[in-house]
Image (cartoon, rainbow, N blue to C red; front, side, top):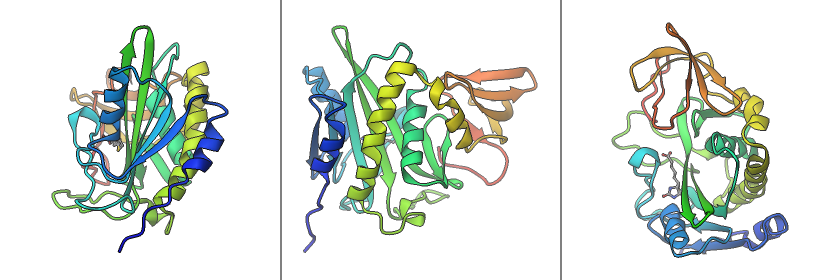
Length: 264
Ligand code: BTN
């Protein structure tokens, strides 16, 4: 018999609620997708700050219309999947996903790196992904920040490079422990971003930039050398045509130089 997972909902609530009035924590055994659920709720006017954790997602979503797979029947020992929903009103939204990624890597381990715009890598493999969506209701904007982290090795069939998992650097860290490490810093990061934008995070992002100094090819075919991000989070790429600033999250950036990266 499997034991129910003990989530640190109260400890998370106690550390976050003073900064985020109205904040609640909800854990569901199963849902299609925590992002989909919070977006559905937002469209019906539920705009309170909430952390929604799913022990299992049946239709997890990734960026660019991709799926985010959880192993069939696996509970959250395998991965940690959650979304934080909250009203947000920054002057400039650019760089939010980068700041969120930075918060994830800084909360977890010194070896983790960021692959622009917001994948978390361990060495040359993807360990975690971030999907940010927003809903507007009247003049209020509600952000849903979804994060999926592999904790244990995942079924890699169909993939030429198996994804990384957190147990490689933090053996034994459970999903509840990882969540407790992540959430208070994540909320502080988002609030700092709301007030000051991306620039306070630029230097720290660049210190964790997995692409820095790598030859990359942009989805429009242009190639160049990646050189960190600017104060608004745009990726700077040195190309034969001069320095290009890549801002669109629709642009896919693929390193050219070894090792052979295949998963984005
Ligand atoms: C990506 O790498 O493309 C982003 C993956 C984001 C996955 C997380 S898991 C929790 C939340 N719910 C979802 O359906 N997606 C995000």
